[in-house]
Image (cartoon, rainbow, N blue to C red; front, side):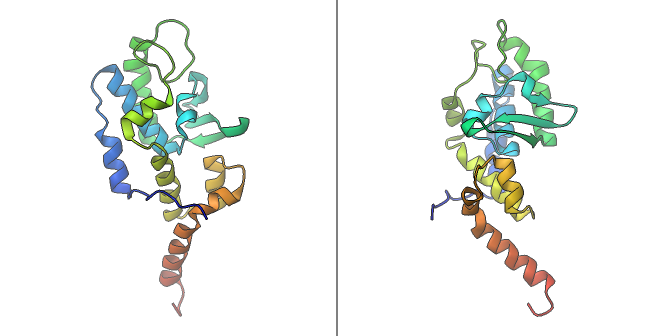
Length: 179
């Protein structure tokens, strides 16, 4: 089967995300962007492809246009919601030059591209893997994670089943009288 990149531990991911500089409008933007990628399990292209209208602050959710034209709605974490709200209030107005729908804008007021995310965190896909792994370790099932990641087929999500096996063992050891 496919090998997963080494999944960073929760503390490592938090350190990576928290390392992103937050000074000025660009820093505020970068921090919100990276937090959103991790807390929503986004692909790079999905993150930079977000429009203002994809954010539903009331419902604390995000509308994501995924691979192959598949759409999904994912929950927005508290931290991500707060950072995006700060970006929209304090940074985006300074970056916007005219009518650009993109949620995340470059210094020139245009949509960011995926290379920007790579410059910030190296391999952004590691954040997506971490998202899925951390959800599994927290007790989410593969089917739910498939929905959240926007995988067309469960077999793609099953590359995470090694984590699931470890979790099942822990639950078994904790729960079964004969363990």
